[in-house]
Length: 87
Image (cartoon, rainbow, N blue to C red; front, top):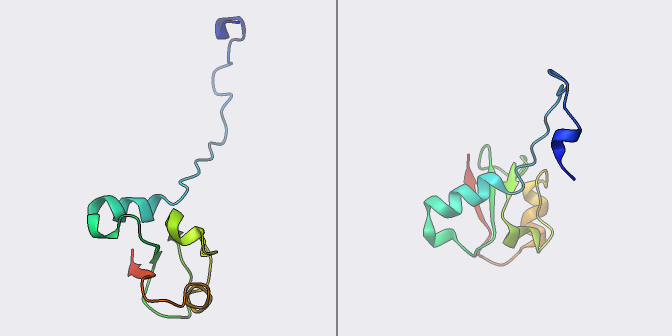
């Protein structure tokens, strides 16, 4: 089946949703090789009263995800190793 059989009218696209799943955490892991394979969370400021704006796949395996409060992230990953860093 060819897409040319279904022309798309000009200006039919009104919204574009892009899901950057773990994007900021992945960028940090690319820029800093020592963070690769480790659970990390990117935060706007280093305080327990904020939330993660991105979490690596390794952190997500322990329940830390985007929007998780940092005090909760520390409870989910109590061992040393969860890296928190400002965006």
